[in-house]
Length: 251
Image (cartoon, rainbow, N blue to C red):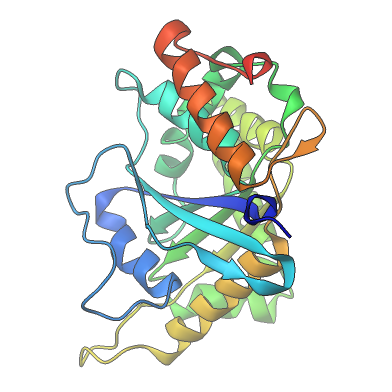
């Protein structure tokens, strides 16, 4: 098998600086404490140079860390690039679900204009991760026989009832991300600064989810291999520079 036949998938981690993305991603990649991300003042997209290799699928998984998206100049194109190239987007939030989470994804409403012919690519899977969630909330999902995804949908629907903008955003999220999942994570460390075993266990579960559910990127009915993915990213960057949009037909 040619080295160019290897499959390639991208996973993006999005969140604000207070959410501790670097710590989250380092633990997700199971990196030692003296290696990994250290991006407290990062902007744009940063990719960990060593891909995660799934031997059974001959697949490389590249992890990208993103700053929290807002409506700053150029971030609509940046979010569009993440949407088009990634097979999974993990939105990492510190604390429990709140209205700010939906507000921070307001750029979704612009995807229809920043990506031309968007229906020709499969959308990424959206995974919400809420860190440092109290044990009572986690226990509710177990005792109430709710999935955590149901819990987040119920929360967002409650927000939507109070605010028409939140309702529009909730509908937009469901439109652009037909596949969603949600995980509540306990604190990473105990009060005595020792690693929380439940947190480590949760990160292993999340890693298994990525391995089991990561998919190849499809554009115009073609599953992209590593070489094709690189060509696509280059063409997307060119159309962003020339037209401020990602025009899939040029790929």
